[in-house]
Length: 376
Ligand SMILES: Nc1nc(=O)c2cc3nc(NCCN4CCCCC4)[nH]c3cc2[nH]1
Image (cartoon, rainbow, N blue to C red; front, side, top):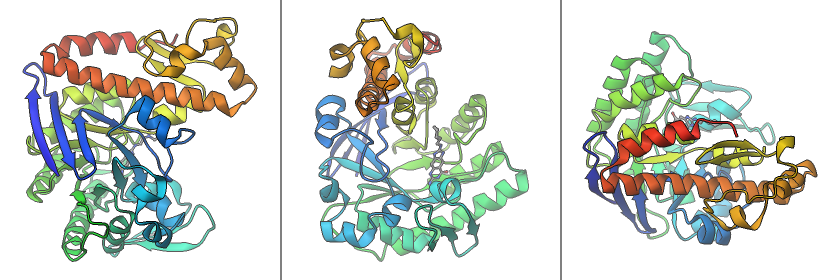
């Protein structure tokens, strides 16, 4: 992987960059649509490419390991072939999903024992086998196996969790070095900063991760219920320490406002289920605020979904029609809302990149944060 830092905004820490991998170029700042189990829910790969045009999407080790399982992915020649997606893919390592999805899991030094949320079978993830699984899935960017420290937690817990994540990081790196690529293209490994919301632990973890000398670095343990101000404060502490010539990925973030605030703090990569999950619930994000399309007020509003026309659905369908589809529980409604929200998120980060390069990012960001903070 190659990262070119094209410009850093003088008034903030915002950056415009370009990542190049064997599956193409990723222009940063970037939002990565979440395709947990090899599908961005309700959207065809062709629609994704033609209408939303993400340079990279997310997959998930925990889910893909349980279903379709790694031997199927291996027989298919990896996840790109299996889902017919020839652009970039990033897989999360499962550290978060085990903690958020599995009914009962035990975290020990060796690894995490968990019960499948699908059929109740027991499994163990270790730094070593998660590296093997991610080699088999074949994503272009793969994440360290870490513990996403639960929030809130006391200092002692956060400290011990962070040190275990650092020991697991060393095990990931040592094991990965023994695992050749399976499908003939490069895979890049990102370590993950922890430390919960304790400034000194975040500094220690950022130093440890920076010293690993990876091609990119991630910030974990945030967007787990902490107040946004805490998220921003921890991001600021960490980006001050992480190397500037490597991309920074803030995991699981976030709302449109969170994304703009964190771009200003020096983050290059984002992923979040919000645009897709909220869409399925009728919540639309727009540059002028959020719309709950199920609200009766839209039942005779025949204006386009979004005049800014980020994607074809914005002008081909009215608010009234979309509200009707949700009222009738037609899954076309969920599909339309999903394409709209992903189109908006991609527009937002691309606009941010334009303003960073134009030198007026701060003023634009302040205006957008105010404008988007409305319920329409
Ligand atoms: N390996 C790993 N380590 C993390 O610390 C981590 C931290 C994360 N924090 C989030 N937050 C997701 C928040 N999301 C907001 C919309 C509703 C569903 C949850 N996702 C994460 C994923 C993560 N993955």
